[in-house]
Each structure stands twice: as C-alpha cells, then as structure tokens.
Length: 320
Length: 263
Ligand SMILES: Nc1ncnc2c1ncn2[C@@H]1O[C@H](COP(=O)(O)OP(=O)(O)OP(=O)(O)O)[C@@H](O)[C@H]1O
Ligand SMILES: [Mg+2]
Image 1 (spheres, protein in one colour):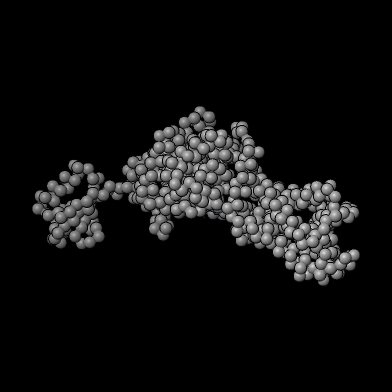
Image 2 (cartoon, each protein chain N blue to C red):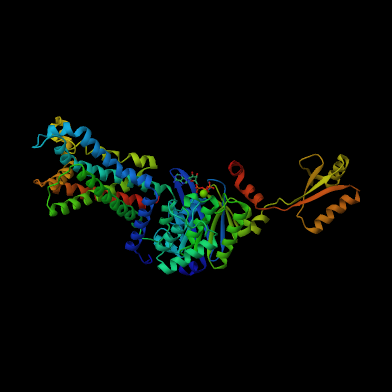
C-alpha cells in the first residue's frame, strides 16, 4: 500500500455515493500520479463536486476506498487534511474580513510563525495581484478577485495535493489564462492537481490525464491525445461555387461525402494528413472541379465530450 | 492505521475567537441591536408597566422603584437570550458561507470553529450584561448583594450564557437557513415571561403557574434575584446550575455531532 502510494498521489477503488436513492457515483477507479494534473470532466450534476468532497474528507463515501497522499480518507482524515488544499466550486472566503485578514487567518491556522505568516501573506497577495485590494473586505471583491483570493488561501499551507473544483468558471479569458499559469507553476513545483472543469480546452491545456464522468461511472480515461483518437470525427469541409460541381464531386467521391449545411458544401471523412488531403484534391482536380474553399476539422475534446456524455449531457451543458 | 498529526486546539481556538470578534466589530448592524433590545425592554417595563406592576408586588416602597429591583434579573436573562440568538445567526451564516467547508478540509482542531463562536459570544454577552446592568443602576436599580454575591452572580450568568450558547451553536447548524436560525431560538426570549421574571408566579392560573415553576429560567432568575437582593437562595442555585449543566451538555454533544457529520 505505501509503495504504491509513493508514486500515486490519489488512488480510488470502487468509489460509490448515493443521496437517498439517487446514485451519484457508481463504482469509480482512479489513479493520479504525483506531480501530475488530473482533470475530471462531466456535465452538470455528473458528480464532480461530490467526488472532490469525498476525496477532501468533507463527505463520507457510500462504498469503496480512497487514498490521498498515501492516507485513507475514511480512516485517517486528519493526515489527508494535512496534505491537501481545496478550492471548492463555491467561494470559501470570509466576506467580512479583508483579503489580507483572510490570508492571515489561513497562516494562523497553518501554525506559521508571525514572521513567516507575514512573509507568505505578502508574497501571495503580490503573486495573485491582490496587493492593492488587500485592505478591503472580501465582500467588495469582483468574482475574479474572489476566486484568486480563494486559491491564494488554499496555497498558504503549501499543500502537496490540490483540489480545484471548476476554478475558472465565471472568469474572463485573461483571468482564466492567469489561473492556468498558476496551475502550471504549481505543477512545476511538484504539486499534484485534481481539477474538475466543464471547459474542454482547459482540460486539454492543463491535464496530463482526463477522465469523463457520466451516469456515475468513468466512461473514458486517458491522455487528451488518447481520448481524441477514440473519436472518429476528423473531416474536410469543401465549399463549391456551382451546384453542378457539388453534384460531380458527390458522384466521384461516392458515399463518403455528405452535404454539409448549405447546398454548396460537402463534408468528407479525412484524417487531415497532408497525403490524404493531396489525394482528395487530386481526384477533384482530375475532374476539373473548382473548389472554392476548404477547411480541415480535427476532433477536439468537445467531440469526445459530446460523444461520450450522450444527449442528456448535451442538453445540460447547453442549458448552462 | 492513523498517522499522528500535531493538534493545536488552544492556538486554533484563539485564532477562531479573534476571527469571531473581528466579525462582530465589522458587522455592528448585528451587534448593536443585540445590546439595544434588552435596554429598551428594561426601560419599557420600568417606565411604562413598572408603576402598576410594582404596586402589585406589595413591597415596602411599592411602585416603580420596587419594580426595577424585581425585573432586573429577567432583563439580564433576556440579554443572554438576545446574544445567543445572534450566535445562532452567525453560526448559520458561517455554515452557508463556504468558509466552514474550507475549515473542515484543513488540519485544524475540529472543535476550534465551534469554540471560536462560543467564546466570542461569551465575551459579547458579558459586555452586554455589563451595559444593561449599568443602565439599570442609572434608572434606580439598588442591588443589596455583597461582593461575594456579585462574584457568584457573574458565575451564574456565565454558566447560563455558556449553556445557551452551546445550545444555539447546535441550533445554528441544524437550521437550513439564516432566517430559520434567527427564529428557532425565539422561545428563549419568551420563556422568561412565562416564569417568575416579570411577575411572581403565585399570581398566575394553575396550569401556567405549574409550568412557570418548573421551567429552567425560573430557578435561574430566582438565583440571580436572590444574589442581587441578598435574599435566601434555597435550592434555586443548585437547580439552576443543574439545568445549565444539562443544557450545556446536550448543546455541546449535539453541536459537535452536527459539525462532524459527513452527509
Ligand atoms: N447533499 C446532497 N443531497 C442530495 N443530493 C445531492 C447532494 N449533493 C449533490 N447531490 C446530487 O448529486 C448529483 C451530483 O452533484 P455534484 O454537485 O457532484 O455535480 P457536479 O458534477 O459537481 O455538477 P456541476 O457541474 O453543476 O457543479 C446532483 O444530481 C446533485 O443534485
Ligand atoms: Mg460541481
């Protein structure tokens, strides 16, 4: 047990959780290597937050086993708490205190000496761009500032495993990128990150491994590249100027080609490699068909997500 | 196998008390009414009802002067009830605000979040009690207890406050919302009226009187009255302390259980 825990920051086996008769997690297995970023994807209500709550000792599992930083969350929660930092989905700052006071509170609760506490607080305020607002009550902060303060508070204790539940939801593009950079810096320092998100580009950008949660189970798990490869979806979109050209092209390309959107476009399955593109264009050229425009579509995680989470998932995502 | 993680209950509790006191200062719109309310009740009962009620007491001087001395114990108990209502509200606010979820995922002495509220409220209650007593003295309250009685009085008031605070710390956690938390402790405001706080119980009809004589606030108020006015204590003090111990224990166990629950 300890030897595996030496390389794995998080080990989960057969994790279950129900609320009443609603099954939220129905047997989940996970391994997260130390110093890596693991991203849990899922539609609204898939159980991402529930998973984070179980792993961070907030909620008891209904079954199965989970180890974080080598300690069992059920039997040894205090040791887990000593190793982790959590930035939950909903802000966990004290609104009546100032940003600085919030951080000081964390320094005191992490039992830093007054001197170390001052230094760490000043550093974090600086790093998260909160120095100017340090003396203002957190209730006056914007959503992005609050989120940054939230994460800064998590970092005061220098945790080795960090849980981030939808850390960039509601942030503007610049703040999102800032948050991504912070995550990269943390990982460079050897920290393990367990991240949940609904943004596939975020998982693509940050994660070493991704798992997709759907219907209480992990329906896919792997590197972003592995997941993308699992989804056939690469195609070329051809745009024509004349309806006649569309008909000819459809005849020579056979059943592979489908009308796409308007009447002057075709969608042809293609892996997007130079060779297969050239072959396709040569065939069209042989018949002297004029191609007005061409775009290559390689599968991205959106395709993976939509393919794996089914109609219900799609609906929930678009409703948000 | 559990790994020993150094625990610092005292240090963590001190940190939490500081946090709660800071919050009280930051949020005077909640703290000030908690002191104003019992002061207003005192003035109302002394200046509006006091003349008539005091005459009914049949003491030597009669009237308003007599009634101040009679009603102060009830007002002191109501002061405590008001403060603990604030405790329930601030605990409920805390629970809904997410910061407590953060505390729960941190390696800090578990009980410190609750002791922070308890000791913070205790300090607030003692301040409120001092203010109310000061106002009472200004409007003619004439206590007759010895110095020893005053020490005993502070002890009794601290015990009552401590018990009710633990009880409302539990209520604050049990309530689903801040509104519910502000309403649930209401009975604590009314119980002094249904006891010997404002009029002697022997003026009440049988059923009410039976209730008044057996509910916890009556022996508490009688003890305070005896200590303030240098009257014989009888068994009231022991009954009052027993109630306090019981309420504190139930509140403590309930509050801890609620805090440690993992749905
Ligand atoms: N305390 C609770 N009591 C009852 N049901 C709950 C509780 N917590 C979560 N649930 C239910 O469990 C399911 C999973 O919730 P969870 O918050 O884990 O989803 P999520 O993946 O984090 O969703 P989102 O993307 O919206 O944050 C939901 O259907 C939710 O209603
Ligand atoms: Mg969630």
